[in-house]
Length: 400
Image (cartoon, rainbow, N blue to C red):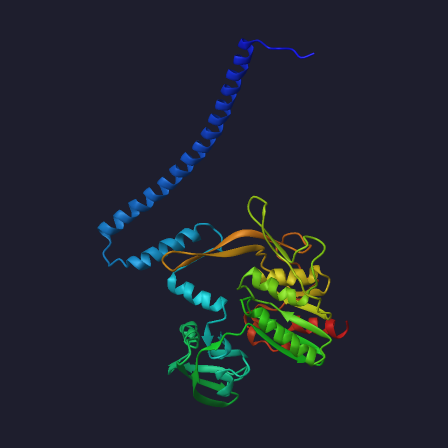
């Protein structure tokens, strides 16, 4: 039997409901307001302090103020203030250069070069086939002693190496030694910077990946095709000191080598934001590349290179040889700015196929092989015969 309530009781219940709704709304609003005020207060304090410094400098600084440089340094300082070495600010010029690098548009003479303090020159550690450098007789192991008539020293080496890069229709004069012979040549610029180098020893292939850019996967396909043509029975991947590039480009390379992900996270990589929410997944959709593999890593293996190494092991197709990696298990994203610059910002943590996150701890090797401090410093100049990490991997692949 239904019971009726009085009009007075009904009105009382309505008033109580309204009061509760107002109370809840006010509580939520106050919480939001307090957070907002705290944020505004913090920002106001920061801007006030910066304004005070600016006033002092403009009134008292003896020199001329370069407004563009000042603005750029302020932006760099802000990102540096995050305390995250993987988040960086780039001014318009720096971003144009970085974007060209990522998109495979940055040109050079077709070599990988590093200063060699022993010889006092620029050591040529890799030369791309068909590149302007190769056409002028420059080969791996040669030493560049002069660039555009300037003698190479420890102080100017980085600057002179940058002069070997540039757009098409430009040239650079290079003096180099090959054994006891010295030669000066004019070398054309504009050759696309390569990120994948490969060779084969016996039936074991060697593929070195120096960075993960947009065209790295296409280069890797060429290397794999070559290995198939040479009937390679195993491949050693070398991602030591590989710390540049983005996670999507690394997973594009993994897609060439691995089958569809069905276990673990069911993805080659999963990006999780600070709230624990999945913001992006990277999947594979190709057939597996059935061959024995091994990956060389070290403390310079970071970011995209780490997910590459980790997933190959997670899928059970490769062991890691070398030393513990850097431990950068995060993902960066590029945000373009209205002035032409950009911020590369850490936006998520990366979870690999099966393993726990290696962020902050790095990837431990299945076979730990240490090099001396001098060997690590001269890794790009170390011959494969003298490279203990490579020799260990070769032994594993030869006897697999």
